[in-house]
Image (cartoon, rainbow, N blue to C red; front, side, top):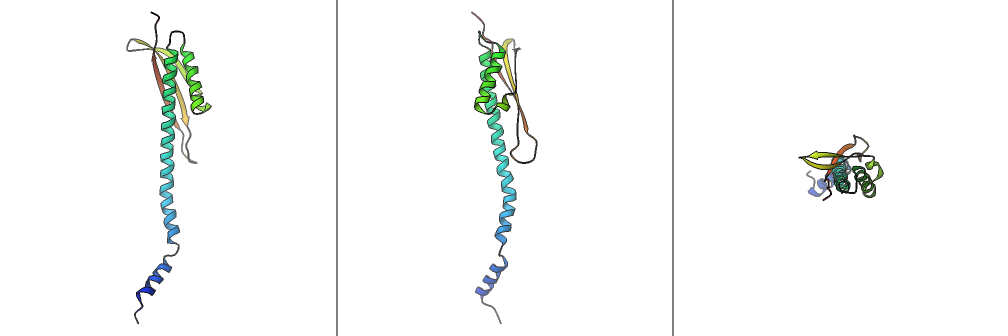
Length: 137
């Protein structure tokens, strides 16, 4: 006796019960780390760009006639604290150097961006901003 196609389809559907849960778990195991990784890259790029902008602004501020490199470092700390968080403004240094024969104020910021997940090391960033030293006329 041959079974009807309808009963075979019903039997196959009953045999695959719970397959959706397994499929969801398998896809989630790939998708969740990928999404967390993309978010981590976005966070690191945001912090890096903010630190670079603050270091450049601090270097330009410290390069003006009536300011010192220490003023530029303080300005950089202030901007980093206002834009991101205090912990990213802990390692700020400033000094004067000659770049291509031009007196320049350089502000360097070093920070560690923590990982989003439960594992892995933080990402260490080091950015530098330059400002041409103004001279009195």
